Image 1 (tube, one colour):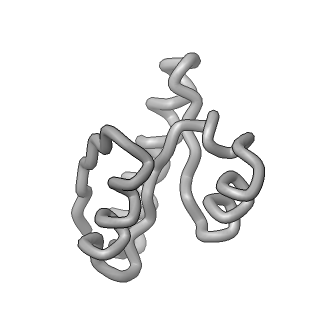
Image 2 (cartoon, rainbow, N blue to C red):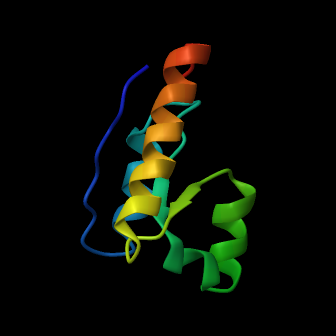
Length: 76
């Protein structure tokens, strides 16, 4: 398992990241994207894990849970 950290500066960067990121990679995105209409639905349906950056403890819990699952199931 591995983690790729991307800090994109514009929405067009997402297109490039999709081409570079390997298959079976699950991105983590801020929860606000979930409420952006069609983009939110597409993100949700594609399996993106959403974190609430306003609630630090909740965000840490989600990321920790994801890391444990990756390690225990040996998935990428």
